Amino acid sequence: MTVNNTVAESKTGGVKAFLKAHIYDITAYIGLIAVLILFFIYNPNPKRLAYNISAVLQAAATYSIISLGAVFVYSMGFMDVSIGQQVGVYCILMIMISNAIGGIPGIIIGFLAVLALALLCGAFNGFVAVWLGLPSIVTSLFLMFFFTGAQMLLMESTGLNSISLSQSIRPADRDTYSLVLIILIAAVLLIVTYFFKFTKLGKYTRGIGANETTVKQSGVNTTKWKVLAYMAMGACVAIGSLVVLSRTGSAGKGTGSGYAMDVMICLILGGMPLSGGMKSKVSSALIGTFTYVLLSNVLTAMGVGLELVNLVKAVIFIAIIMVTCRKRGGVLPR
Image 1 (cartoon, rainbow, N blue to C red):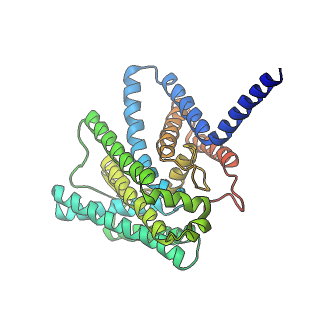
Image 2 (image 1 turned 60 degrees about the vertical axis):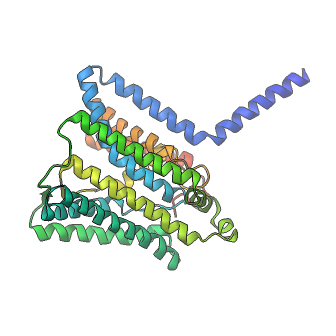
Image 3 (image 1 turned 90 degrees about the vertical axis):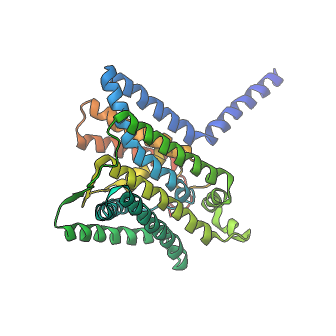
């Protein structure tokens, strides 16, 4: 009996240890499965289901791409609140450059210019925060105000509330467009997964989130890897901005509003701990993004008003924060 009791206790302890170690992942997968079930329940009509699947994919494409880049930053326990304003400015700049040059070359040049600007802003955010000894969120606040002003000035220079591309960059066929988005998401996922799992960039960003002092004492130049992490996210923000532009074909003063908070919610729903560290995973970006977008679709299908939709999201967000944020010395990212 004693041996059997010991074995039973050992198994129980093993289960508890497993649950404790994988609580973020288990919660994230349960949430995704729950909203998937509701999604199919509230879309019984095959035509409506096909349309909503396409709509979900299009809405999720931008969030997933930006969230994949943000994994590097959030794994360090940092964040960037200027994402939304960057998206707005990047879309406006791409339209202006594309319309000025014309055709596909204009779109390519516009995207490359925006990509260079995004990399520069990422480098600024990472380097200046270390140089001045400030939390990275402070420098991202500066960028948020800077890009807010830039977005307003750019639109005022046109004298319009919104501007549009002279040439559409979206395939006319919905199925073709969905396939392009799937390929793009898969490509970004593969690249991010490789750098996050198999290179020093992923190893050191997770290490900084776990214990930056230890990483520094190991002889690692943490400033370098912080800068590279923010630059990686910047590249994904530029790609995400191109996806936004492909969907809407236009941009204005409100373009990109709320994206910083949405990305943060996506990552947390996907099981990303706000404190970062070794439990950070690339899968959090995709799981959280599709959970978030599917939840929005389901709530709308249920007839829930926009105000209540935001309230439900806020309640879920707070609940997850309370469960997952157990960081010593505070709950918010640095």
